[in-house]
Length: 379
Image 1 (cartoon, rainbow, N blue to C red):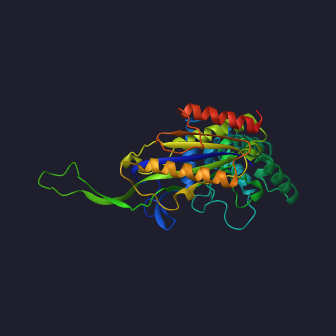
Image 2 (tube, helix red, strand yellow):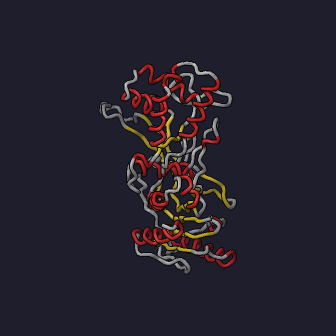
Image 3 (tube, rainbow, N blue to C red):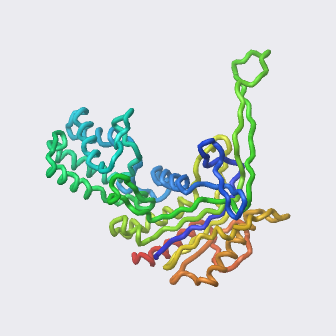
């Protein structure tokens, strides 16, 4: 496996970046102790949003995808109306087309909102353009009731259109369609749940809000409540299967190079945005390392199976980096390094530990990673 790994240590101030269904910050048991946690899904969405907002990679719209239940009204109908179809016909054509994707039991569209799908569709912008062309070409059949032979032909043609559309975010994070598994895309990137390197206890912020229009004699709060939070040093890990990324991008190695490097930077510099207006926990990583080459991936969370404890004059971030480097060296000694292997780290913790070259800044890290991915992909 040709891979690019990212290992990050990030200390976040009091925050609630990723909540569960009760509003509490997510956590998990690891090594027998409660840890702070940020889900892999939340981290991946932060990267996708950063791509969409053109913060990293500078991808054009045709190089990206959109995940939505509103494909009919927000994308297909407007494009079909630009082609001269009435709104009513455009809606019928769009619904009939997407209905061809349905195979199993259960509803494909919501009962209360019949123009929205029951689940999110992750669709490349190029796939949407192809869908519009397909609908326009086959509009006569799609507006009527095609026989079984024509319906099969329509379904087969539609299936060929949904090929991933060379969208970088779709290639990285994959797509699953429950009704049509053959249209799924296996993700090239795997993202671990972030875990704190130490045990955590949730804390509560009790707040009150005063009504600005209260008369002076009324001194009580207009409302009150509490919000849970914690602060933590998090270990974050992700790996990109470079061969799978090239495959998902239909052999475009230059786009795969661009996507892998953008993922490295975006994953390092983004976090979920939960409760940031209340906490403003905008804390960049203190340690970012990459490992690239051919071999098996290694999640180094076992460095923190025994939770770290604060030491006098030793910040948890530095202790975490030292534990991580020790685990890295141990695995290299027992299982061997990647062959070939490139690696480097941006370290603001001043941790003690050998084996991973320290680089001066993020630019140097990106250039070293670019050298590695270029060599692995042969571009």
